[in-house]
Length: 177
Image (tube, rainbow, N blue to C red; front, side, top):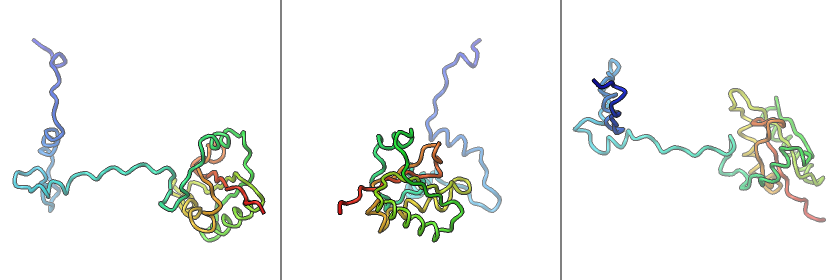
């Protein structure tokens, strides 16, 4: 007598497995049955139930198409995260409204660039459940004029500097007078 564990496992295709599962499911009262595998379902109907293509994971939580094209160079990011290069400025936007935060960010980066600063830490906070408005909007603001001309790149900060709730912003060199 053979035990169940001694027999080879039967492999089912995804379609066969789905049919087994779908056969055990009953629609809710007042709802029509799902007809994706019904023999009379057209190919167009079956395709309409196909899962959507997976989206690529975002590099930054709020990176938009307008965001600065370049992230920080890996070496520079490593030097900032490890503390070998000092942060030359720090701006904390916690508790500010969007309008106030945008004005503060613009003024701070314009002043920092004029003073020749190169590495800035912008603290946005994470927001509720990691979906903070400032966290999402700051990269968008950095991609718009007048800041786009100043920003060389940005990256999420290391945990010791605020992690997901902060950004390293690299400023371009000041043009010689």
